[in-house]
Length: 313
Figure 1: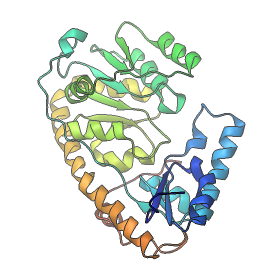
Figure 2: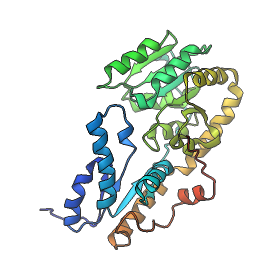
Figure 3: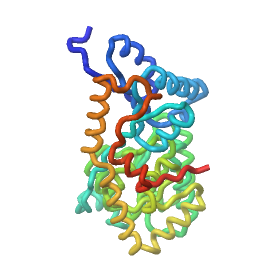
């Protein structure tokens, strides 16, 4: 028995959909934050992928509302599952151009290295970034931050592609060091492709670091015209050489990139969750197939064409 019955509940990740009937049975209105397209992740086998697809459908059936953190996720649920979502993203932390304290210890200088921060999993395309970088004539190092416990073969394949310009740091848990890396990189490379709006991308945006991203709508919807996009190792090689030969243009791109952060404000996020909780508590929302909430500022901007998102074939 609960000591205090909550007014509403929010469940994170559609994988937890089997718990929804128990919450509904307690007469607690519930929203499910569906997260990314988990069934597209390479780490899941056939059973795991099938489970996630079924869980998505069950979340639509058993939730009072669904939350998406990216327009691309919202579009997927609308087009594939005929469901409405509430678009609530994340905040972008504003990172100043920090005076580096740790970079010297890594042999790095401000604006003299490329950066990747990602779990080493196939859908994050670190292999494409490393492969393309090695093919390029880039002179500066590529710093790779990240690891993967269950992807040893894939991790080894990335190391096998690398040359002496690629510097692997493994997992970095010191947030100050991470912030220094984001804020002082020449270019941030973002290969994520299935997870919706990614906090790592927003951290680079908040740092005002020019970003080259994998060409999917989740990333183009955040970066718009401030980003440069890749799909292949050849694209990466071209963009790496471009970055090192157009450093003055990178300064302008960085300023434009940091301006994007204004659209990802934590107050807007908390206001969005508060609106959602109030709507759930008074019974305005009973099914994801009903009309959505009054659009947030981000949704309104998107509808007006301010936030542009390209959907790739």
